[in-house]
Structures are given as C-alpha cells and as structure tokens.
Amino acid sequence: MANTKKTFLLPDLGEGLPDATIVEWYVKEGDTIRLDDNLVSMETAKAVVDVPSPVSGTVVRLAGAAGDVIVTGKMLAEFEIDPSMPQRAEGQDTGHHHGAGSHAPEDGDKVVASDEGGVISDAGEEAPKGEARADSGTVVGAMQSSDAVRSEQAVAVGGVKAMPAVRAMARKLGVDIARVRASGADGVVTMDDVKRAAADGSASGIAPSARVKGTGGAELPASRPHPSPAPQAAPSTTAPARSTLSQGGKPMRTQPPGVAASGQPEQLKGVRRNMARVMADAHAKVVPTTLCDDADLHAWLGKQDITARLVRAIVAACKTVPALNAWFDGETLTRTLHPHVDIGIAVDTEDGLFVPALRNADMLDGTGVRGAIQRLRAQVEDRTIPATELSGYTISLSNFGMFAGRYATPVVVPPCVAIIGAGKLSHDVVAVMGGIEVHRRMPISLTFDHRACTGGEAARFLKALLDDMALPQ
Image (tube, one colour):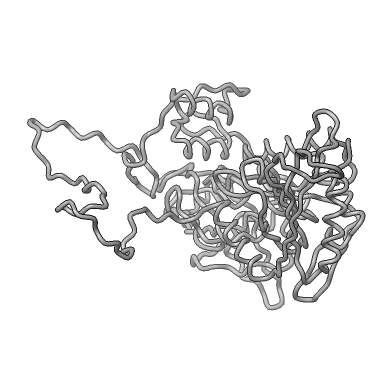
C-alpha cells in the first residue's frame, strides 16, 4: 500500500478554548514518529499538556515554532503514513479517538470530533466538530474522554526526563534543562529543580537572541561567530540620552506623543490571553455595582487566620442572603441559587490570573480551609491544577490587600453574581462612646450584578459578612 499524507488538526484541549500555544516540539520535520508517541507540548489557558501523535510515520510539516499560537481546528502537523508501522484500527476505541480520516460520513451520520485533533483530514481542511461529544475538559496530568484516562508522563527529550509544565517553566526562566540536576524519581527533573537552578544560576540557558530557527521551526543554538582578524569600528547605534533640555541648553516645549512606540509589542498567550477574553466578556455582560465598608477586627482574640475568617464570613453571609451565592443567565433571565458554597479564590501569577475553586467551603473549618487553599496555590504555581477546579464556583474572593490597596471594584465573571474584595489591613481611629480608640480594620468591597439582586440584598449580605468578621473568634 502506498504511503498517504495525513493532516492533524489541533484538538480542543479542554472547555472549548479557541487556541493554544506551542511550548516544545518533541520531533522535527523528517523525523519518524510512532502512534501515541508525544508530538508536541501545548499550553492552554489552564494547562500544559502533551499532544500525542495520531499516526505512525514521517513528520512532513509542523505548524510553527515554540511560542506560536495555533487556533483550535487548524493544522498542527502533517504526516506521511507508514503502513508497515502500527496504526489506529478503524473504529478502535482508545478513549482518545483519532479518526481514520479516510472515512466519509454518510448522510445522517454524526461526525464525532477526535479528542486528539478532530477528524484527520486527507485534504488538510478543517473537519466539522461533532455535537454529540461531551467535552470532559483537560486536566494537567491526564486527558479524559469517555471512561478512559491518558496519563501524562515525564517525557525524555534530549536525554532529560521532565513533565511538560516543568519544561515550560525552564523555558520561561531561561534555564537549560539539560544542565539541571534532577532530584526526582528515576532521574526526573522537577519544578523545584528548575527553580533552584534559576535562583543559583547554575544552569543558565541560551539567550533568546542567540537562538535561530532550524528545520521545521525548531529552535537551535546559533553557532558562535569566529573572531575577526582585527576589530573594526562600527557606527554607533546608541540612542541619545533623554533630556528635557534642547541641544542649546534651553527647556524644550512639551510635544504630543509620537505614533512610534519604543516598546516591543507582545502577543498575549496562555493564561493571560484567556484572562483578556474573560474580562472583556464580563465587562460586556454584567451590570456591576459596588458597596464598600470596613470590617472591625478589634475584638479578635489572639492570632487568627485572616483568609480562613474571610471564608467563614462569606459562608455566613451566603446563608443569610442566598441571592448573592447564585448564578445568573442574562439570556434567559434565569437565576440559580446554590445550597452549597464554592468560593473562587483569585490567585495572581506572572502568567496571569487563576481562580481555583475552594469546594464546599460551608463544610470546612479553619484548618480545612487553610489546607485546601495551600493545596490549590501549590497546584496553580506548578501548573498541575485540574481544569475542573478552575470553574463552577458560586461566589468569588479577591484578597488583593495582601499586596496593596484599600477598596476596589472587582470584576464579576458570569455566571456568578458577586465577588468580595478584601483590602489592606489598617489601624484606624474610631469614635466610641466617650472617646476614641484605634482599631484594626479590613476594607471590604462587594461588587454584585445588579440584574440578579437588589441593592438591599447586597447591603444585607455585606452586613452579615462584617458582623461575622467582628466576632472575637
């Protein structure tokens, strides 16, 4: 049988995300790859995942290099099928359907999208996505479809074993992962190994300016130029120093900004790219209103966990006024009140904003809250948090005061109805009966979607939260 070219389309890597960013190719054009071997590491808004090869054969063409954004459903790679090597059997159920690409659906048949790239098209065109397939989402560490789970393994590339998220972190920190001392089992380089190498400078990577693109868009170290026989004077390219004085020493008149920008444009990718979309969508759909007040912590006994107290106070307020622990559908004007409290905890990172869900906060005590939050933060930092933990919360908390700021207008992200913002603690002079006292207080901002609840409901919710925060313990 003659060899056949197959085009592999970028799959939906979870929750209908429109695109993904190439982190690292595990092959280059001309390489031979086997079925289910890892093809490329891709970063989405919520995960860094390995995408396996849907076929066995020769890599003919790759779409882009590390850092390029690929739209879901567009060409990711093209292969020359080798019939002598293992191939996916027609209709074989592996839990991550690849599709054979040679079968044309009959009239009335449903085209089922492949978890690993949709239908593989011989012509290289986009295949229609199936509507019968329920997207199970993408989890860092596992890709689940139907009843099967494909585990993510530490992949050995260039003699180095590391998870995709670890490789992505090494690239971001400028660390040459091949020079990092591995401390994991079986010689696997861990996230801590990469961070330690970045901190002590023991494995500095090649500077971006010293890399060139090789065959297939892969990055290769540039060869070092040979020294010239004799140094030659080069024309000076140093920009003149900025000054408020003219060359004659006189103050210059203020000029309007020019059309040319001095900075380098940067395309948003991954988490930050998704954050931009979410914020724009929220701004267009929600009717936000904000109430502000201060929680008086003067009666607190001993040292207490502030975040745990905030969570407890939010739970108490949700029980008092359930209208804010709700989802709202602006299209159908439908409100859903939740009997449980799942709090989305905003976590700020260099890559962008994550909002993991603190599940069943109404069932946790202070110790349980602290343990759960530490686990979520660690998973966010290591990019190992399941996608299922980044959605489905019923109300949100932004504890921005740990950095700076007193009051804010946090963004309500639909379908949620409310978000609480906790500002920076301060010691304020407070009037009391017969004089004044200095109390420790925490500024609280409550932003709510005014389509879904009234100002009175929001005010009563805020009062219940403040009352719980004021309790001694």
